[in-house]
Image (tube, rainbow over all chains, first blue to last red; front, side, top):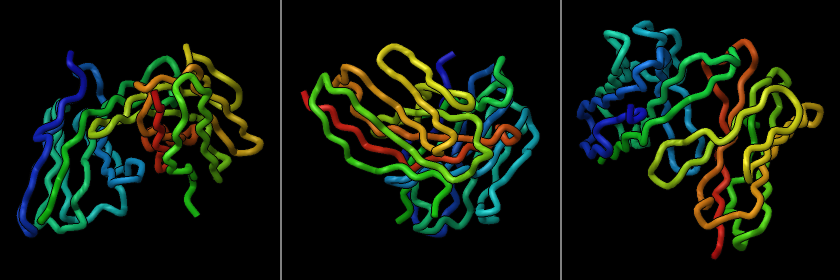
Length: 117
Length: 112
């Protein structure tokens, strides 16, 4: 297993276009998370899946954002009608509850950088 | 006021120095405390996690939690140029382990 994989690594798009990012988590991890990170800030939680079920979605998340994890394996994050404010690094992470239940040990991918012109 | 405060730096120290990185927080419900390291254009990677108060040591790294002061620290001994990165603290309450609250990160530069 090569860890959490994200594609594409960098996407440049024009304002108003739709973009989609893909995340392949560690195979035995049943939890998958999407975060957004801007320069000089910590990651901001977007949404979270346990297997194929989307259990939590940030109330700050616009309706233009949608995420899926159809078979409980890979996930996609789609942003419709992109705006310049969407420019950020989109991070995917996965986890599996270990012996210390309650400790949320995340393994992150390298991220997908979005630039909206 | 943010729930988790972290000095953004940059913090520049000579190779071999002891580094102290800190976060303060306001929510007394936080029970799990983590330190992540993030290299430029990479995702964060977990360095240390601790539960409740106390110290935890792993090689050159020591994490401390002082819940009475709502203050956590990460110490790096014998710092190396390869330690140059952004260090992020993160924490969560006991009953909400699916969502972490993050600091903004401290940029650390180790000068050879």
